[in-house]
Length: 326
Image (cartoon, rainbow, N blue to C red; front, side):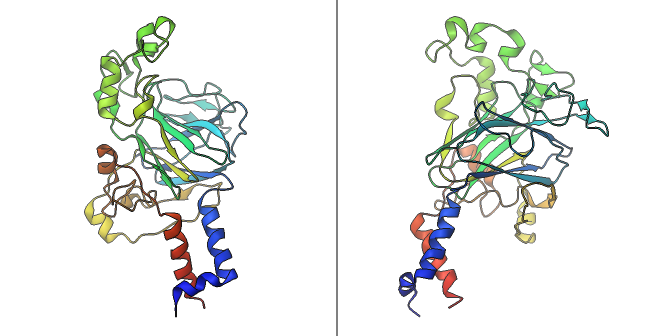
């Protein structure tokens, strides 16, 4: 059968274009939170002014589970992970790091108390999404953001290093639960990019921000760290992983690949032996969020971006799959 003749079929063409449109995230984007830590994390969600709240503003995420939310086009806000939380049966309590200050599991419009690792997003209205992982407010746990199904650079970003182990004594919180920013620790304008230092020209990297940048080169290390820390993608879905880890070569070879469906509201069990699952969509040069050999962290460290299927390749693949049913 001539596969190219299939393009003349209105049904097949419509099917292919529909799949393509869905892949571009025309109805918004999904955010999937994955916990690879050895402990429970309580993610917090804060929508920016003018953006609607998602289905939750704070929830419990046990280790090796995930939860997915749908965000509308144009949504903007931030995510973070709370640790060391103690909530009772009525969901009242507090967290050692990233606490909302409300005394409840749901943050209900309140942000995180620093120090905390932040993921920040602005979903484009028919244009590019902008996203970053920020250490400007300090650090409390490793986090990585990966894009899938989008077009453009769509690079992975985040901080996979445990900065709590490297944190200088003057920035350390407690027994090493978190690491403060120099701004929070000292409050001086040169560290906070405030007052006379409130401009990119005046506020320059410091020894502390350079320490953060060296450990996590793709993350914001201070307020004007934009050129190397803001990333773009168009029409993607995103995965935010807490405590990402590189799976062993053996686990990649021995573990069958699988995609666990999500209903957009509940937690799901995940195989802790498969690293970060199917969160990447790399092709092209072979470097991406998750490579075939599982070495997505190597790609992150080297600054390689995620590549995605081109529109022509996507439609061709759809046509080939559709031919199987003719």
